[in-house]
Length: 258
Image 1 (cartoon, rainbow, N blue to C red):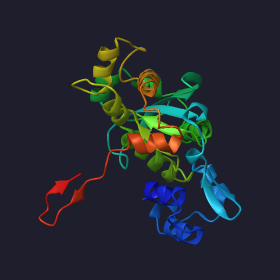
Image 2 (image 1 turned 90 degrees about the horizontal axis):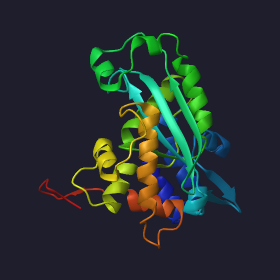
Image 3 (image 1 turned 45 degrees about the vertical axis):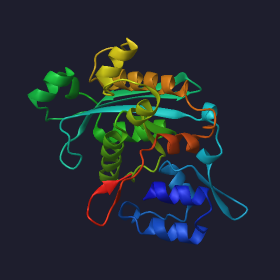
Image 4 (image 1 turned 180 degrees about the horizontal axis):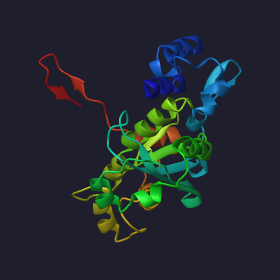
């Protein structure tokens, strides 16, 4: 819903008043004064007002000037309402260059053997780690209003957003981009999982299924895809629209089509 509203603001298909009313109807924003643009910017939406019009900064920012935050999380389960982040890693990238990094384990008293086998993370790593609230507050500051990028972005984005909400920090409103979808638009290969793309590019940044290593691999994929981007994709919002998969609409008989 937020993506649709941002597109309408950019194309001037919606008034400022209508935009605010639509935001007020989003459950996740029920406790937030969405008419205060500073509140929205704190939550990651790069929105400003100029001469009575709302401006989304990413619609004007050239890709080479945009800060992207490439993120990966490890959790003790896959359900955001039941499980918890146990490790988060992220790098910021601007004009193809890594400019900063974030990495932390998160304290937890629950870690299934299956997660240890997959990631190599054990209870000794988590017992004395910083609290979830401490790590997520630091991560939100690190993220700022960067564009949130991840491999299968909806999983990481929604998990982090739900966690922030539960902690009282409000949801994520950052613009987001999926490196899997970007790779599908840019690279010809049978599989687009992170391990398959590691083999395709013949690179490794350490142990797979560790947050910072996977974030750096996703950043590498992202930068490689940028190298073959069509020339008419110039601004950050151009890129987000290019990468975003087309929505499926349903026919009356229930079958779907693009």
